[in-house]
Image 1: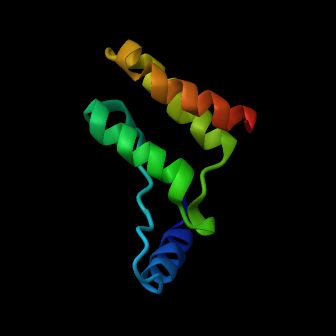
Image 2: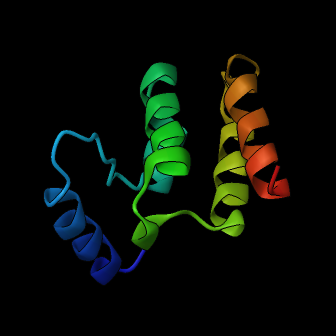
Length: 91
């Protein structure tokens, strides 16, 4: 994600009063290593609540899904992986 997009998203989010706007874009390392609850919350917010400047592409989410599938706890992340699959399919 380009730094300019993150800066623009942060600037826009600061103008939104009373709304929770997520501006976190996880790194590959975070996707691979964060706990299930934490990474699920981050990825759900990124896919569903991001400002336009940082909405993930289907390619980015496909990469996220592949990293999730490689985790030891992938079976426990099946709901999140399914969400990624729907996002990639644009459903």
